[in-house]
Length: 345
Ligand code: NAD
Image (cartoon, rainbow, N blue to C red; front, side):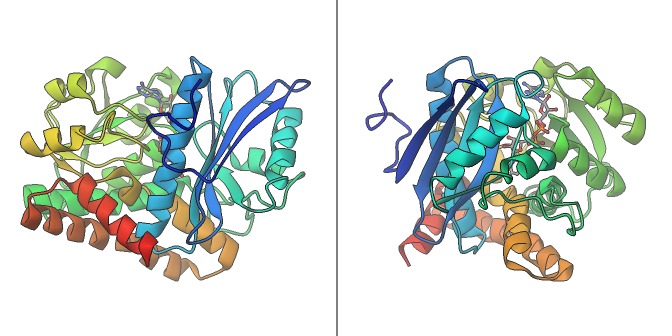
């Protein structure tokens, strides 16, 4: 497995391969960049099909966190952790504590939080062995879980994207296809429903789909049908890499605005989206609500200040869309340029 010559390697400051035989822990921690502050990023647990797939994911995710915090104006760097395993079968307190010890060993260069496959309870367990576990603030509005804030930021960003691309000032009757109705996707659906949008959803877990159908009146389709549904907006809220040449051929929506990290399978897909007349809200800009929430949990600030900071995601996206239109560049590239400018300051 190549590391320094890996396609996704971007001068990451540290890569730590963690193994604990007794608990079965296999994890990779990536610290991408600490120029603006300690590397904060979630811990994902996923049954990767190979070690290479896990490495690729952590390299891309950690870089995305650097850019996310830079654009969101947070004094944080970018890092991420992936645990190779099925969160429904392989997770144990021993495994989480072993990870906590490894994180503690990095002396604060990396601070962990929730991501797909990990919960507030998991962060509490990891936090038994390290002071660098966040998203555990019991007194916060959502008990430490950043997902509702992520969903709110995506909702605000989706509204801004619809206003820009479709010239619609409200979401009444706007059809939104949501891929993945887990922690973020479910909360996003609640915001969308309250705003009058029509929901078409999918998930690989039938019980997650059932919850949105029965509680929010969503229509459901099979996972492989979600791209081709007649929708105004596609909101990816599951895993990354789902915008690729194959899904682009099927995609009907003219706006992509969702929570998933690393939505584009390759950077050049962004140009294809532009050529197809699809407005893409760059993932690390629109899904920053959770990291902003965690930053407020760590550094303090009122609920009103947090809300205002999250709502600035809408303004950031408008600026990116305008700059992209003026320069003829794709939105992803413009976001990367703005993040790079902030990192170099
Ligand atoms: P989650 O695991 O709670 O939800 C993801 C959902 O997607 C699950 O219900 C899963 O069954 C479903 N799914 C997986 N593969 C699928 C597929 N092929 N088709 C349809 N559904 C599928 O995770 P989450 O915390 O809601 O995060 C969702 C995405 O948003 C992830 O990419 C995560 O990295 C990103 N994100 C989350 C946060 C946060 O605060 N939780 C913050 C920023 C970004």
